Image (cartoon, rainbow, N blue to C red):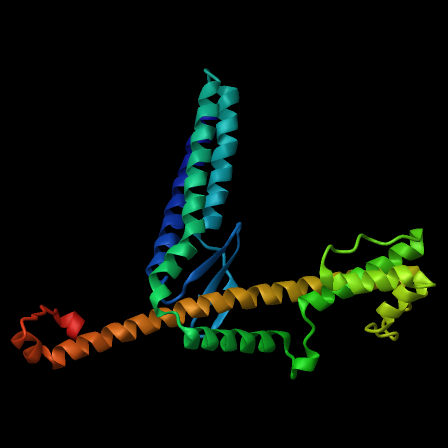
Length: 292
């Protein structure tokens, strides 16, 4: 039973590994045109699409790699149970963990390697153009017409914080701990000095809530509204996260294009001035591909 199942499992793993390597090679071959961003914790992963000038969540080869690793890890546990000596399965699982660690560090370092290559070509103009493109896509994604319509993640977080305090005070006459930041000191002092703390919290919520959407005197209505506010807060966070990632990937892409253009100008200059350069002792051997 074990031998037969292992044979089938490893055939499937071989097919998955081949497909994963093919996808990894395809991603690496187009990295200059469509760079991939790995978060500091690997996930989420984003890919830049130059045609749309936008980033989208992407399931790269690293996702398939971790899936394969999970299958192998469970097989190693089965090996420890079925095969003697039992330490063989433990040894294989330790070996697998080492491979996972090396591959993870490689993917984590991918962003640094990409930025180190284009660092000399990043200037203020490249950064400004990238930031404007990223903000333009943010506006399109949120479908807003003016700056006044934009509600940032920070603002949604503050709204959710005050709504949670309002509900907690309603239930237990206490509030959540205030963040240890100077910008919250004024609100904290206002709350502590307020004669009616419940009314103070309610007024903070009423300053932004639409009374037609929620009844602040209804506990059930407020709980439902808190769920909606949580969703909006997460939506704003993901939108700003994608904007920051897109900003970095556009910098990367624009700097790469600038490097290619500079290289083309250099070869054009060498081709045009080759006789003069030869007279002063400078000789270049250019291939047809380079001089094209």
